[in-house]
Length: 78
Image 1 (cartoon, rainbow, N blue to C red):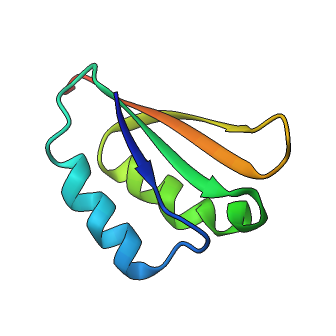
Image 2: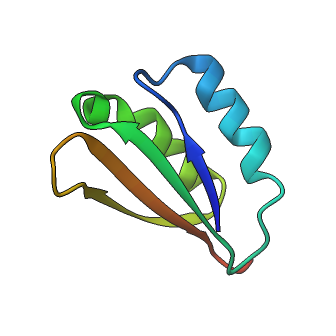
């Protein structure tokens, strides 16, 4: 599982970089994307990208409230 830490803010550059990284993920493989919990409201662009790129995803907050994790799995082609 590849882990991608987007840091403290989700920028357009982060989304573009993530799109490039996701292109190499094969069906059934997973990636974990990490955000600061305070920036979880910025995840809409991230979720839209995951849907467009054919991923199922599950967001989850950390127990301490500082981090926000998104586990994404590429779906098989239809």
